[in-house]
Image 1 (cartoon, rainbow, N blue to C red):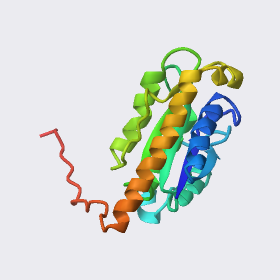
Image 2 (cartoon, rainbow, N blue to C red):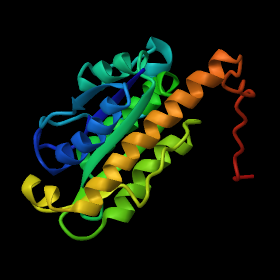
Image 3 (cartoon, one colour):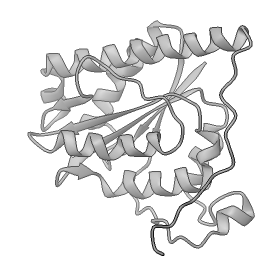
Length: 206
């Protein structure tokens, strides 16, 4: 089993990375393979709603989003991490997730996911809520922890002093590993992911 941890910060080894590493340690201790996927620090094209992915099977823009969507096929779970910018997720991770879920949501559907946010002081709950919405619209079980998945600090060293935040990350990793093993045990007993009905779209404009 494998979990991809997405680092949505422009800083490759910053506070968000530090938080994800703590969750990664717990996953590894539970025998789960991991990969930290950094979105990078170059501009990420936002979704323009062109619909090309519906015809091509992928987004027409070739960048890190395409790489992630391909890797997502073989992954069993995901943790998406972001710094808090103006009480919201980073612009990079927002553009990244918009396109990844719209063009490659089928590769993530039914797989457990969690969000992690890193902030200096405030805005964590709003950013956390924003990221979780991607999972609830894509039939993905959300993995919880002992508190909202957030760490505080202005530097990685600060984050390492946030004992409660780090414990929350470890609990998250343990809970993710437990749920993945439960799903695997269920699959071995013949319990499959529910079949979906044909999607119904209701317009409220009459």
